[in-house]
Amino acid sequence: MDTESKKVETASIPRSLIYEEIDGQPIYYAGYKEVLAGRKTREGIVGSSKLQSLIIHLILKFLYKEIGDGEYVYFTNEPGMHINRGNNLAGDIAIYHKDRYEKMVMDEKYFDQAPNILIEVDVKADLSELKWEDYINRKNKKMHAWGTETIIWILSSSQQILIAQAEQDWILRDWTKDVELLPGFSINIGDWLKTT
Image (cartoon, rainbow, N blue to C red; front, top):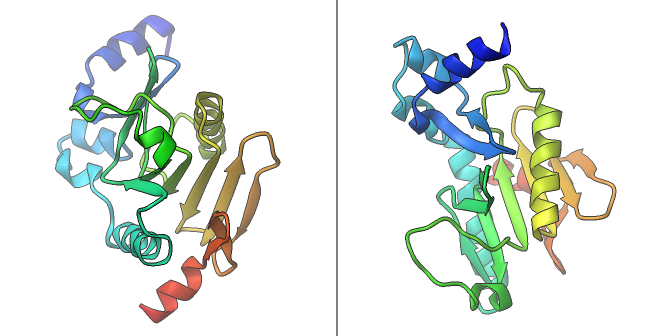
């Protein structure tokens, strides 16, 4: 398909099916083609699965119980993050240290300040034309350049966790191993799920 045809095709896709935008390139929700073909509804592709929801619930439960909300503030429900023009990202849990949080003005706009830590549970983006590792790499680099220190990807299909810290080698490990979420506080997704 030539570039002009691709532009026309992209222009005909409703903005409501865009999950994120990186360098001006729209990243659509996984399943958006089924919506365009009339086989699914938008509502049927944008929500989280039961497993994704359970993992997010367990992480939030851990954060409030073990760490509390004195030093950090936790945002969920796909907080939108506006880095700059053409770069609008989302996440499952955005963790802000109180220092960053207190500088924010709470309004109806996307976050314009980077979270200290971003947690992602699975990939909600359509990756039919982009390899998942390229997508994760681009998103991690954007978030790190913006000021996010750590991005934790919880990948349920492979039962693995990718820890991407700025200026360090990224670590991929089995989700039955402890992962430090915040200094001194580790989580073990695999163990939690066995007992839930």
